Image (cartoon, rainbow, N blue to C red; front, side, top):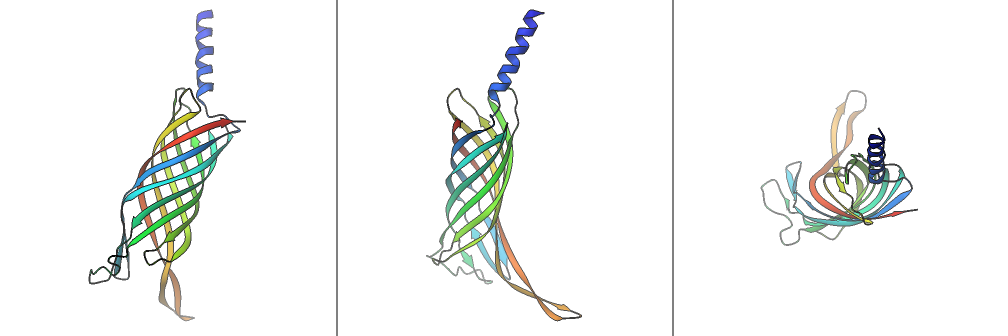
Length: 206
């Protein structure tokens, strides 16, 4: 009986050691690869080409295995733009970038081991740098899932998959209303980029 009690104590202690403690925080360094996305509007077409993404975030665990994070991500890419005839309008001048500033919520699932699966989602803004040198700020969001691999040190690594989206107003469509005549409705286009990445976390506890 004493033997089983000792094993139970050791097992529960191991679970406690693997949980992500409340009132702790992490500095996260991001690296990932975004896959391309196609945009179509009114006969015109644009491609957000695939490329690498990097950034950093500050994550605070307000309760066991639950965190909020403020992060910044940047992806330099090419955004070729085509007219309805399929001719690239911005040939030779198609470099752009996406800058994401997002606030995320993440829940980690305690498995009793050094592996912590997690799911998260967030919202914020994307600052789009266009190929012609302009910029705009738009609504953005992301969802993510992955596994955090804890170590005996303050450094941990996680691998993840994510989906990022940005929505931008591009013009207006007009519809006929019986009472008001033609009514203008704002049109939007949205990017949806799937990516795979890794995060190196430096974990600290108050």
